[in-house]
Image 1 (cartoon, rainbow, N blue to C red):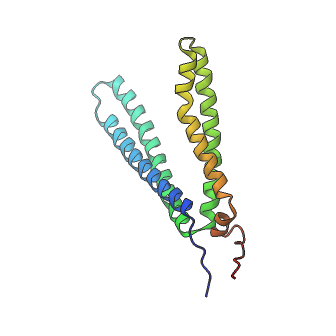
Image 2: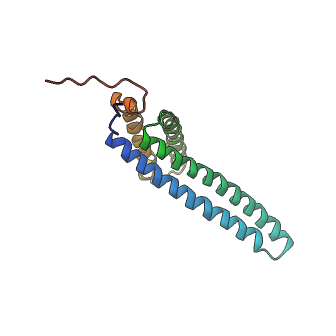
Length: 165
């Protein structure tokens, strides 16, 4: 009989957040594809038709990408729930990408805020709050995924031996 590792609570939380993110991406993708179709269909003059078709094509393309990413997130959440090693690896990669994006976002927003001399301090604080929160969340997730019991759940490390008295 195989000794199946108990799923850590943090993984359940991460998987649920991944499902929510996947659903939001799917809804956004569907909305953008629908908006792209609407842009392409509703234009009267030739010049506005070309612009509408351009924005409609871009909107539909971005929507298609979001649909694919949303499906990927739902597949990833399944892997997280089931303790699949590939889901751990993909989550690590996406978390590192998220950290890089948050750092870049914070840097760009801070630089843009410094260009505006009015209310510099309040502008910087208010504009980098959310990217810093996102950065902190991604760092916590990355730390958690490298915990021994979490890696063991995904088959990436041997579980600690249990001692019985």
